[in-house]
Length: 119
Image (cartoon, rainbow, N blue to C red; front, side):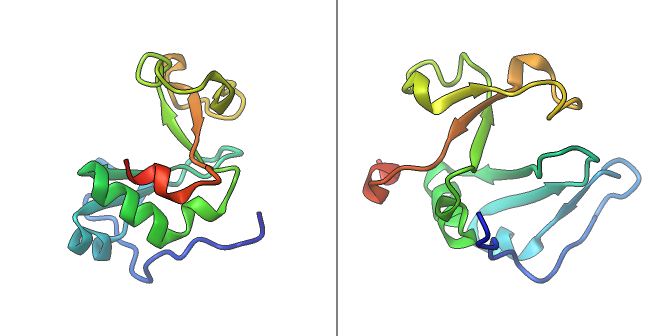
């Protein structure tokens, strides 16, 4: 999609010795989540959101992730076993070579009913 994510302006790498391939957005910590963007040389752009489930959903909505039908949650098949199978796709090593095969499953975040994400 051509819509841009609404990312915070400040990007930092607080530990460039050990986390050389990612940047953080400290402003998101004020919202109860950690947002990390990986700088891997791969076809996909990978973001990581950590926090309480409701805070993650709020942050994802604020960032504009739900406006992108192609956005997926990277997960294991086991973690997504109760999700509708048509929302789950196996991601090839060519797209995510740095991620172990067990966790190369994309779960679609796109849903036509926004209120269902809040449950």
